[in-house]
Amino acid sequence: MHDETIAGRVRPLARAFRDGGLTRLTVRDGDFEVEFKRASAAAHPERGAAPAAEPDRPTQAIVADVVGIVRFLRPPVVEGTVVEDDRDLAFVEMLGIRNGVRSLGPGRVAAVYVTDGQPVEYGQPLFAIER
Amino acid sequence: MFRKVLIANRGEIALRINRSCHELGVATVAIFSEADRGSLHVRHADEAFCVGPGPVARSYLNIANIISTAQICGADAIHPGYGFLAENARFAEIARDHGLTFIGPSPSVIAAMGDKATAKRLMREAGVPTTPGSDIVATAAEAAAAAREIGYPVLLKATAGGGGKGMRVVESDADMPNAFAAASSEAEAAFKDGRMYLEKLILSPRHIEVQLLGDEHGGLVHLGERDCSIQKPSHQKLIEEAPAPVLEPAVRAKLHQTAVAAGRAVGYSNAGTMEFLVDGDAVYFMEMNTRIQVEHPVTEVVYGVDLVKEQIRIATGEPLGFTQDDLVPHGIAFEVRVNAEDPENNFAPAAGTLTRVEFPGGPGVRVDTHVYSGAVVPPFYDSMLAKIIVAGRSRESAISRMERALAETRIEGVKTTVEFCRELLGSPEFARGGVGVDWLPRYLRARQPVA
Image 1 (cartoon, rainbow over the protein chains, first blue to last red):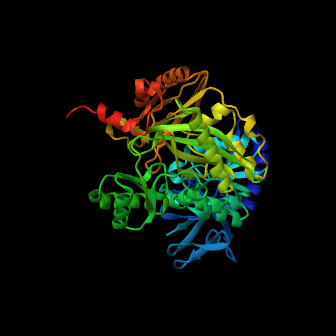
Image 2 (image 1 turned 30 degrees about the vertical axis):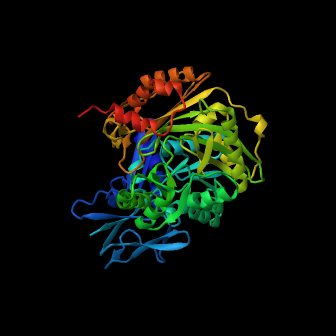
Image 3 (image 1 turned 90 degrees about the horizontal axis):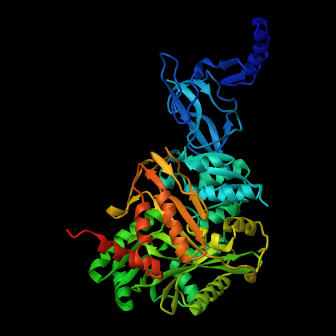
């Protein structure tokens, strides 16, 4: 495959990755394979396990403790949001009740794994917080 | 028909329900605990949601997370299977309040029959014979007083009970305080309801139960009986058989008629089982299970009816597709429960990794299971790994077939009941048929090496 061709194929994918707010995108087609990752969510977020941190900053996965629908705050917490103390990052709505997703202390939001309105299961990582 | 059914269970019964749903063209949602992530029921379902950590109180009994899962998946019905929330009237009610069809009888019938003491009173009022017993006894002292009136030995039972949990034989006043405390706390842990009642202990009864199917329009039929007298000392069933062997035709007819009359008396709908103690010609109502039972496959084999499919059809409001006369039993079926238990050590349950799993096949053999080579048996749940079911034209041929099927079965990594059940099948009393519930405990005592 030509370099030209690769570049031609990668560019629209990169745009889609950036605009789609994805954390990871792998495209495979025959011997062509390209993977995009957000730096702060470099590791595939194994459910329930803490995602790999940036080299020198420990991060903590904030997981859903109920089954429900994620509701973002207004304005929503995004990657880079700094939290000063233990506060709500979002809600998980279960049977009409909004259950706060707490930051469990101060830090910087290193990754957002879910989108507003997404169904989540018990133990599913929602955010990564850099402490 | 439903579009999507949430299966609120795990293990083999979750797979069993999944199969009927798929045959009916209904999509399925599995729930699982963190300990069951690798379980087969998760893989077979169209969607799967983790609802909590391993311990059942936080996952398979977590009503809020289960109902929420059903809502966010757009399920329109919940099948509870057996155990867990299957006979929890409150769960059935909450499901209904959230616009979900609970595949089972109405919450009021579950509540009435699920409360074993209330069920017995209702049955007595309907003219169904019951074993002498008490209402709820609140304390050990109250239980002892009631026991003296009934006459020892008595059976102390959990009113929310089932599966032998929360049940003790009590021989005298002196044994009552310990038995009461143990059974009550066991029931509290298993069913979140520690209330107890007493029944007179009939020394060598047979446990014979009648399968019922009722629709929501007053249609009610029976699908014959199952003999579940081969029970461990813990009263858990180990080998079941349909129809019951060596039973006088008059007693068989009485069982069927009594079960149908009892079902009609409570306006029963969906699948249910009337359990009886049979002592010679005497038939006593023991309890009703308002759910599909573990041993339902022996009935399915003999009657050629998919009971789980019928449950689902009935829940959609369809009338029964057959009459009593359409239901004709053929041949004999046995079921052996393959449990991760050590028969040489009081059936102590075992957990661990199954290093090798091979199930039997061939003519007349059905295996309902959720395990495979490499599967992990978590410590939190029932120890049943599989049910091996065989069909035969005669009792003798069915027994030979089961012996052959068990000989083909290889499970390594944990101790199981396979070899022990094969030994039981070879005993002359088993071959003769018709033993009482006291047979297996006596067999075990006689088998124990003299110390």
